[in-house]
Length: 152
Ligand code: FES
Ligand code: FES
Image 1 (cartoon, protein in one colour):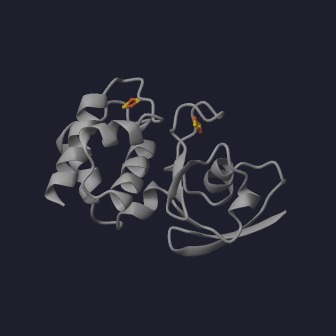
Image 2 (image 1 turned 90 degrees about the vertical axis):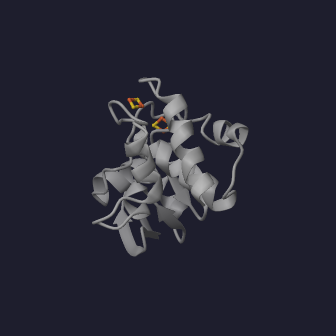
């Protein structure tokens, strides 16, 4: 089946089996591999992307369901040359170890800051509650997001 949507500002099209997830379509058909796939059943949050302004788990959404939507992955959050303020804050505050969960964390945090520019610590924790980090960098992730929110 054909699916056409906007990916990081570019119109894209893919011809995929109906059961193909959005995550697999983005990674394998459209070659944007910043979106990671961990559990493949909606638990870890590694595959989080933004669809029409909302953070969604792309392993739980079919590629054909994205037809006509605006999809943003971690690649779409910064220019080629510069880190976004959020990415820079993650680096500055050492908010990652292995980095596997990081794209999902940053995408979820971006969606939060877009709808709530000054989140409380509780709101940050709630928004990121679905993003698991096996390296346990949660306090540093929270600090990085809070710092960006404070700087506005
Ligand atoms: S890979 Fe989608 S939630 Fe884990
Ligand atoms: S930094 Fe390793 S899983 Fe989060």
